[in-house]
Image (cartoon, each protein chain N blue to C red):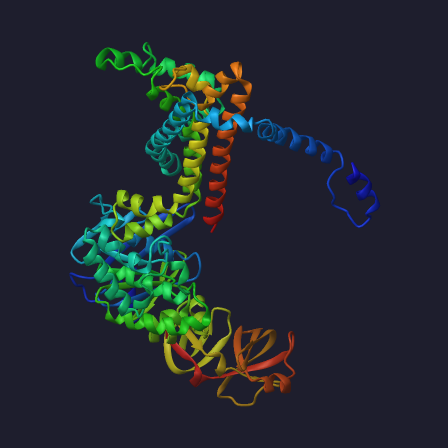
Length: 367
Length: 273
């Protein structure tokens, strides 16, 4: 697991004496989490994964809200936790800021008092904490809301207050749990852009937990994909989007993904079907192509430069102005077609079609 | 009553009240309301002012208010920490501890008074060393009134605060910890303010219970005018010699209690989230 960066072709993270280095291992009943995470100062890493993958658990472990069963967490030159050395700093002694999913702004305190809370707790005098809180509220554009109680703030405003509160006590590590999860679609867009700007200004390490691919792709410098408590893929957003390694990631980025064995320009898939590819390789590979590359025909297409196979339509879903057609057959795939094609081809559940993909549209990379 | 005939004639009504319950409920209402109404009706309005301004009445009222308030303060100082331990602590025997807390709730107050003797009496478990070492004796003093009232009333506060703590979101405490707040700071600035309505409701209940306390008080603190004779005791004694005056005093207590209840109701309504 330590050489995942190398495996996926992502740039290896230089070892530094600052930033976060964590080996997190816990077991809770049938669930086990085993994650190695490195985040450089100023870097934003998104911990991406489906519900129940262990993202939030990882975040709670980093914050010290849950104890490790085994492993260690180092932040800069401070060891936050080390099970072998029996070191464990309580959450209040870690320089870690957390933005919780539903923000958890203290309902009985004003926005200013919320932001000043950490400073006051660490011993700043009232005037100093207040001044600092006001400057933070100004930075997130909420100066005029300083006196408001959290319940009077909108979702987006509460999110910014929560961010200001977490950053005001100058953490070296910022943890965000589904930072945009509680917002409606309209607010999300602007808050996401704002958040990206604030994260760019923050010079500490940032870990953002999310199950939303778009949030991860916009906010993060690097993605760490978690499934069933393990890291299954790690890399830059572009790299992950281009070369998904699991069905979950492929689905997130909207690609058809297959495992197989390459020999020259032909890949024999695990299911026994074959796909022609443009770049000859050999050995175990992953093959990916976008749904837009799949062309549907009523009869067997003539062109020999294409991969084609008979398939049956299992579902039709409207996605904006395209219709996503789910196909089952020799190769299960998703195809994006226009509404016109649906009408012309007479597509409906159970309809028989021929699917075709050009070899040049496929992307092949080592498994 | 006519509810029976109406439900029979009204065919559309399918989920009406079971007929036999209605007259019984009416009797219950009368049973609860009539005595209170009687108190108001039978109050000797002409001599009311005279009775209430008697020296004994004023002494008893002052003593009652002071002792109930002191008992409430005592309950807050000791009961809130106990409620926190019960709600947030993790240790074996917590269930047993909660049972111990609720015992004074179900104990007949007179038995409570006797129990207090066994603990704080001159020959009591704590009372004897207290007497021998410091020369302090508790029974039959004003302090004994406070102790008796606190003993009987504290469970009300503890249960109210514990319930509020259980209902409050512990993740706020976690948020405070990630902001660098010590546990004590978190308790003062976050935990306690968040359950403040529960504490207030508990304190009011506690105060009302302490104000009306009779059995444990008269047993453990006795009946000395000016030092241990509280309003309920005064009412009881007055009833033996001068029933109309007892009614007048009772009305006073009733007014105080209803005022407290009204205050509590407002508190509950305004703190409703």
